[in-house]
Length: 246
Ligand SMILES: Nc1ncnc2c1ncn2[C@@H]1O[C@H](COP(=O)(O)OP(=O)(O)OP(=O)(O)O)[C@@H](O)[C@H]1O
Ligand SMILES: [Mg+2]
Image: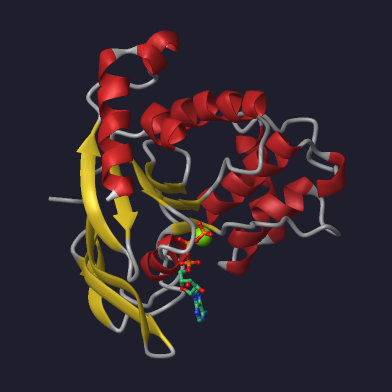
């Protein structure tokens, strides 16, 4: 049985259908990419999966429980997940715990325990503008982790980073998500990123956006350095290009 799924989700804005009949599943521990062009409805779908928006029809299930329209059950990192500029890194990442009712000292303690794993030790008392882009993103990921359980929805988590920081963060996220047993759905419009990270890739196309196809990548994660020139990579990329071109 899938850990997380949505079934036949539809959504319109002002009478205009934006996404149609979206069904997708996440199995425990999977890292799944959602690939599609700008405007295809990826963020709309994600906000429904996170429960911050309601579908017109269809439902969202976590371990078989209907959580349609219920926020806070899964972690959700927005496309522009800005850290609060006037709060320190430690206070930013522990905020979701405090919002859940945990005492501030306890929340800080829990956050401190994970700062190292998230490459943030020593930055506890720094403010967001004092962090590098990669560090800010890791802080936002840690905050997301604290906001939900171990199902994590990420809206373009790596897109604003330079190429080197991006591949560093890819490797790091593969590591952390395996260690912590996270199940992740991430949005991207970067095919290479999708192919590098994903166990499976859903491709969304059209207006309204629909799941055009899905693709499994069998090479184990983390993938070898030469994966990007391997037969599997190139074949899969061809399939993605065909799917998006259609
Ligand atoms: N709150 C809203 N009200 C009205 N229209 C909206 C709203 N949110 C999104 N839309 C429309 O829905 C469509 C899909 O938007 P969405 O943000 O989901 O796309 P996206 O795939 O995430 O794009 P991008 O890759 O640029 O982030 C767009 O045409 C957008 O204008
Ligand atoms: Mg978007």
